[in-house]
Length: 507
Image 1 (tube, rainbow, N blue to C red):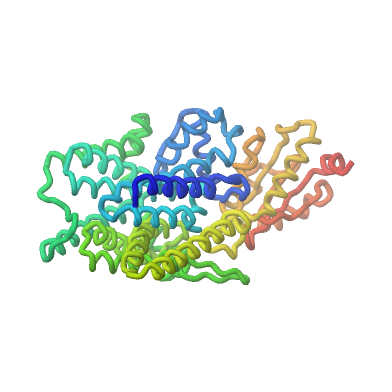
Image 2 (image 1 turned 90 degrees about the vertical axis):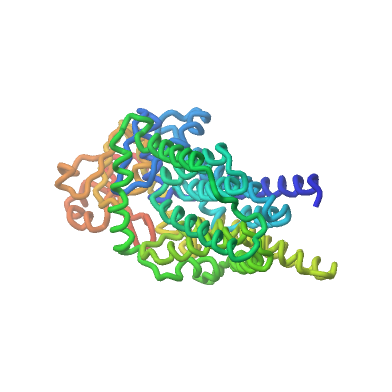
């Protein structure tokens, strides 16, 4: 394949990846996790303050990486922020991951890179979570960047590549605690690849011994990068220690998953075949091609493909063994499977001796890619908040937006406008994403019970979970009009509207 053809095809793939990731970013209601991250970022945006919380938040990189984009769009307050700004961050990193595949073209060839890029561009899982304001997509970007720079270092053990893999290791750690799984899997893959190398000749095998100075440089850069973010750029030194202490909490969380407990085969079930309510989803094409890629790694004796095969398999096993599972945790090893799928597709094409057979394989691959693209459209646009979508998990219901519009409509007729007193009485699970959607209101309070709220009579609006509404609802019947709204599947909120505001709204 000529360089011109490769560049043209790669450009088309990138354009496709961009379109899938940036179109209609504000269509889906904010997930409670997205809203939580957004409000936390808002404090950094408005006051320049951030302190790492080891108890129930991931690393700080997402917030600091959002800062330049928010300022570039002229949004300097939480109230001014919108879903597009926030979700553009993972979208950019989702597209960036496709560019990272270029690190591997010397090892697997241009065709494999094009196949991998095309699959990544239209993968329903990768597209859906590239439109989701959580850490996962930037984490996956740093996984590929870490593996790519580490592999390039193994081919050219220079100080530059050592600094590169050190930086990406630091960013991995500063993004999410599951980076420890990535580091363990990478070390095991390097050792096993080296072991196979000693027993047989491998193409593009790592070139030990490596310079101790370069290794020390990489480790130093990794530590400095992570410390810079966890210390909030030297304003919160305790964050560095907390980043280590956090693993105690996360190990406990992983072993006691509660409602997030899923069987070991959960991730592969999501990817291979998922059927719900008459809808069928499958990314089995990628898994099948990845298996071909693993086979090709051994048959072609390609050290890079072998290294990626071992890394992906170990990462998949480790993530699957952790009882605590959420669907977005499929991405770190699925990204590796995408690269191997590119190798597998290229190998299938190479194995075809007849022109007609090559054409048939290309046609099948094209049809498979179109099917993936159709599923991505379904998942990210038509069924983006539908529980029948395998990647929808505790997603905010579109019905919740009716509640938001109702509150806004009441504020328009209220004499106090955005200073209308709103009291939210609900547990944390029933509260989010309200703080995001009520961010422009100046007098909003959140309590877990009525007593903590100091009473609720007199508030312009009261939003309550059903268990709390049962306790104080009867007292409000004469002074308030009540309505019900869905928050998530099987989670309902009750809105109480003070009678004088209700009367104005009905005029």
